[in-house]
Image 1 (cartoon, each protein chain N blue to C red):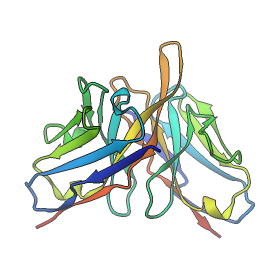
Image 2 (cartoon, chains in turn cyan, brown):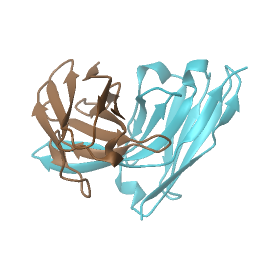
Image 3 (tube, chains in turn blue, red):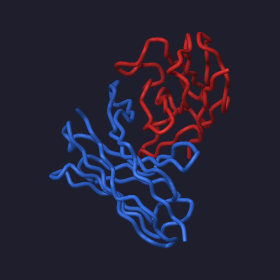
Image 4 (cartoon, one colour):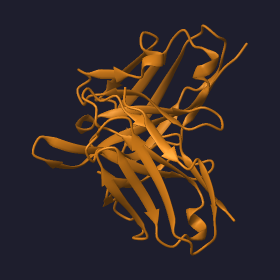
Length: 126
Length: 109
């Protein structure tokens, strides 16, 4: 059974740092891109960051570039999100999710987020 | 950046109704479009990928269509368990920088 379990959330002051973790099990973690998605209270979903299987490529939404870092440890089946210089607008429930390739047509592959964790809450407030 | 716009933002419907939600991309995304369902207090659940392919285990009353910039999610006969918020998501970009629509909340009439 695929499981993703996030941890590390909490209350932090503006300008502070927090490190989120996502423990993966039930699948070959090293074979999948992984992603972080967040959801502010009462708001919609916002993609935050992606990381390639081997960690060689990483992509971020503009609002977190230069402040957040995504990393992974394939030996430990673990995904991380290091969040620095936190702002009130970073307050959200943070989900990790698996990037699944549904199918490919030639070089065109169709990806989706097929498994999600339960989320970990980050609150940035003084 | 590709922007995704869903309509309506909310709707009220009755059990048995046919419900249609639309999603428009700010530029062509071929069929790189996914739909998710989210119930309160739970993580999103993948319903449809590649615009029209039903994810395994998802009831056949859900269907998706469209290509380019205009997409539709249809629930053919709304069931009590379908009251939720629905999101579209594009995954067209290279490099992969994805965006979600703002969501459509389906409520009980």
